[in-house]
Amino acid sequence: MGASTRPRQGRRRRAMADINVVPYIDVMLVLLIIFMVTAPLLNLGVDIELPKSNARSLEDKTDPVVVTVDQDGALFLTLGKGEREALDEATLVDKVSAFVRANPQVPVLIGGDERVPYGRVYQAMVLLQQAGAPRVGLMSAPIQNTPSEGRAPARR
Image 1 (tube, helix red, strand yellow):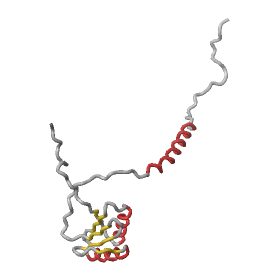
Image 2 (cartoon, one colour; image 1 turned 135 degrees about the vertical axis):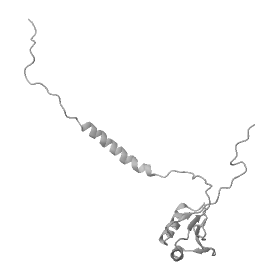
Image 3 (tube, helix red, strand yellow; image 1 turned 60 degrees about the vertical axis):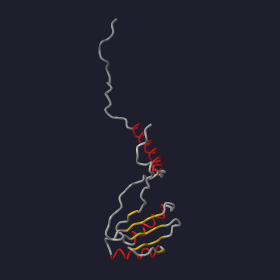
Image 4 (cartoon, helix red, strand yellow; image 1 turned 30 degrees about the vertical axis):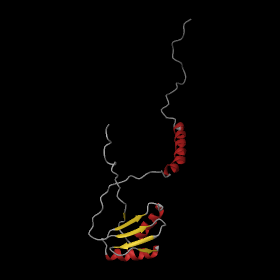
């Protein structure tokens, strides 16, 4: 006998048009946990050596206010062409504040010894901000070129 060529009777399965999102949610949650764990690690400091520069010195007609931080972290103030004097933090804020109010366009510079911790120079910058200095420039020494620097190597 021959096989029946009639289609099956009963319910036909319809194609499902929905996407199963459960695996995608699982992957998303795993990635979220990975990013939450690794994000705080990305903010760690990196040891770097800052580049040296041959920047031109600023030319200004007025004498600047210069705050110096020495190797021990002591603060010194030079107002214009005056003498350099050692000050505590409160006196520094008072004197710079009065001088900046009298001369609003005066440049304010800070110079720190290369052996002083950066945090101490930063504290001095905060003091100058409290004194009302609109901008604070950083002082540096120019690069000392040796005779062999800046030239092409000799050919043999």
